[in-house]
Image 1 (spheres, rainbow, N blue to C red):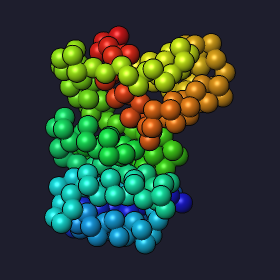
Image 2 (tube, one colour; image 1 turned 90 degrees about the horizontal axis):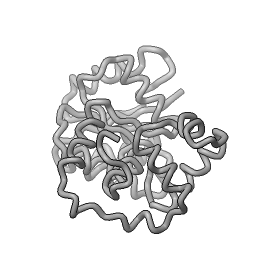
Image 3 (tube, one colour; image 1 turned 45 degrees about the horizontal axis):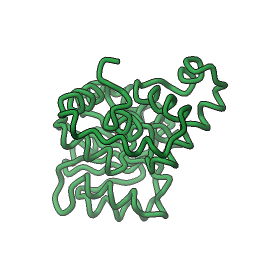
Image 4 (cartoon, rainbow, N blue to C red; image 1 turned 90 degrees about the vertical axis):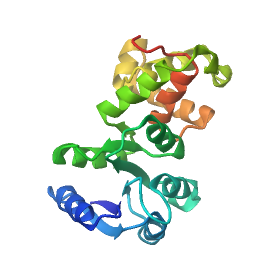
Length: 219
């Protein structure tokens, strides 16, 4: 059973998310909160697998609440999914940098919501396709001068190749096929990249790949 806490200031939204998430029987909403501050307290109390976090809330917004949860060593295995009606670039980047394992818009279908919960509970990162396009378009629009390739200095040539494939959105299996590696070796390289670059998950690796210029939009 995947245990979920829903943090949203609207009771109707929380009720709806609970009903949608629990539909298939393998996900249980074990707690709710109406503010970011209360949400952090509930997460510390209940230690769920996944948190569905709204952005705009009183007392403490969802981005700051996400930072607090991610920074707590006792909650290192809790995955936060930012679920919002807002898709502005600054919110997306801030959510990823704050350590969110997923960023989804509230117009997501019920089946995709449940799939997203299962994906992040399994340790993967997930961005809605429209969000991914927004992230990449925003990076593409930045002046070339702001690109900083310094993080790549820490990587071997093979690690750069793997990061490039992660940045293009390939799964571990697809990376293995593209680079003639075994799936286990591809997983090892991705884990090594997370450690070397201080990234929490694949979503942050994608941003690093673009911000360093290793992957160019449309490549």
